[in-house]
Image (spheres, rainbow, N blue to C red):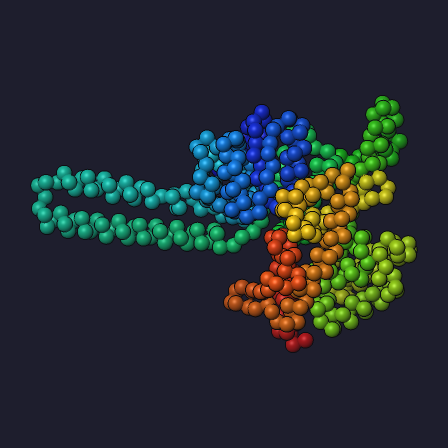
Length: 502
């Protein structure tokens, strides 16, 4: 069932209890677990965190710890499954689902005793009524009562009784068939598409805010979770805009300009000094940025090649697309030598003008949405990371460089990369993300060139040979999802080009 009050119906229920947290291996889940760890630390809640990758891993992890815990939190997993059917728990085990995957399983929605769904349903979710999907028990009861009544009618002739039973049986079968047809139609409409709801990380950030336990780090984890949905194609631009409006208000509250204002003298000396020092050390800014992957940590040319927005619009898998890229750089006034240097090594004046250069080229090269509202985390004066940088880094950390590294070790590295004390892990993730993006776009371009993306009615499929050079990168679901998303967008752009006769 859906809970009404996240504090009273969820958080206060787990205080003082031992909790088992089963978390999916994705970016939003990592950010959500980071926030949960902070809340658990604040209230001294004992917990066990187990990353899972697939249904079988979730079942195994639950069975190993089922005897020790009675409270289970599922982060971005389990929401689309009938948990009681899959996990077979004892009756005193309670599940709290924090899952952005949709649609939620109807058995979880209508279970009022053991399963509680933390996120509220969105406007796009049309959940079937209880009677329309579980109402067949009433028909069974009517069948039983009529059979009992028939046995008492001893005075009725055998022929009349047989005729009446046949008529009533036909009516009942017809009524049941109509009910089943309606149920099947409703369930098909409800489950035919998979999609995503709100980010689990931002839901948990709002919990921390309502508990007065939020800070800049917790807000940043929520921002990364929201940004991950945008980068991975799991949310719409409109929903992202709604989220950033609320996030901007929290930034104004948590990152005040006390350290920069003369009003700091109104505070006590110690408070003013502490606030100024904290604000200078870490702050979040909301600003317009370019939808280019890792461009602050890469060369401009490579970032343009491996950003979905520019790669799809310019059709960089074609010869004409390659010429358009060179033309774009020339029209921007960016020397080829500079475009092939690391962004931080470019001429200072070119770096400062880079945003304006891209804006001027937007109309002529159909790059209308190349600028979007983003967030940047500042560590002092030297280190700053865009939210999309963190998303790509975490995705890359889930893809181990060594086959011997387990997925739970990757999950721990991803968790650690969100901490200020482990910036080296984040930097490592960014470097690995460059390699990952290069592999994904190379795979997509090769598939388009060799016509390996096959149309099968309403679906497309692409086969990756298991023994191929880059196949190991796609054993991780998030990386495979990125490949599918980029290949789909590229195929659609290529199909439109063929349809237009270009």
